[in-house]
Amino acid sequence: MSDVQRGAGDGRRPGLLVVLAKGLWMCAGHLGRVVYDGLRAAGAVWVYVPPDADESDGAEPSRPVLDAPPDGHPERLPAAPAPSAEEIDLWARFYADD
Image (tube, rainbow, N blue to C red):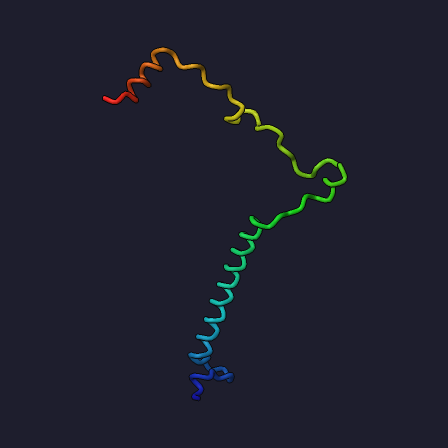
């Protein structure tokens, strides 16, 4: 093998195979981190996380618990008024088969 392929350690530029191996190692490391982060995120969705220990002894929970939607939430808004006779007529004409 020539010095160009092996890479010389005496101050000369590294060989082609050394540069390619280093690049391949860096790409594999990056791909491994991406795959690991993806699996960790997927696991966070599918793995049961037990409640805090302080909640099991009857103490106040450390995070807020929502009993009902906050003010202004669409589920808290009043129901729509009943449609008038004109609106009923318009909807009937809209869905009529002409």
